[in-house]
Picture (tube, rainbow, N blue to C red):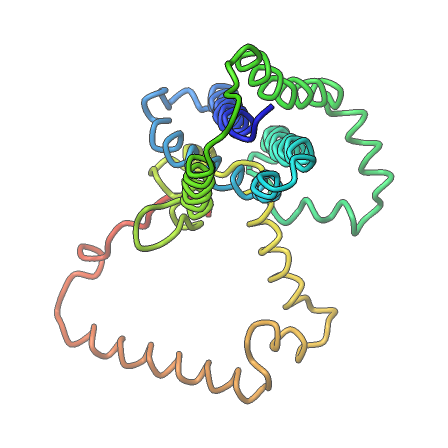
Length: 290
């Protein structure tokens, strides 16, 4: 198989993987949505969720793309690229299914609580999961999600015609275009800023916002929360916690608090000088789980 045909199959695999992950999000909304929400309410979450899926799947497939690029010169790496691609997608699909089940139990996407599995009685927690959760059904869902995109991609392009020779110019243009598209997908945005966590608040309905992060995004946010909690844990070294938060000494933390307090006092005085109705002019807080 030529490198161009490998690239075509990789592109189709990427597309089918995104479709599969979007189906997971649709099932998520349909399974857990409150009766007060309609499918029209899901549109903002589905649109932003698609960007999230593109971002994290592109990150997971970066090693496969690097191997495929190297496969231009070393054909033996092309098969390794296919294996790495399926493995990266499999991890993404697995985390999506875990996030689905986690929401069913905790009514929230994966959060820092998940790391308690490694801090408490791990064996007891695993035993509880095997007893109370339909683990085998989840595993079957993961196997189905992982198997469909590569199998369909192989079947659909199995009989495609292969050129006898490949033009170097075409190969280079394909490699450059694929790299640029993958970079845009990893960034998650064509605007000034990349896709960020604050972009997940797309609706006044908290549940719609909960549908935006996929498994990898939710786990990444949970890890950041866990690190922050660990930095300020009461049983740790206070100086170590302050250092992790960006304050090398107690004095620097006190100074930051003093400046913040002084700023609040000045802003309070300025606000008090205007005879306005505070409740009337305070904008409503945007609802969301993040």
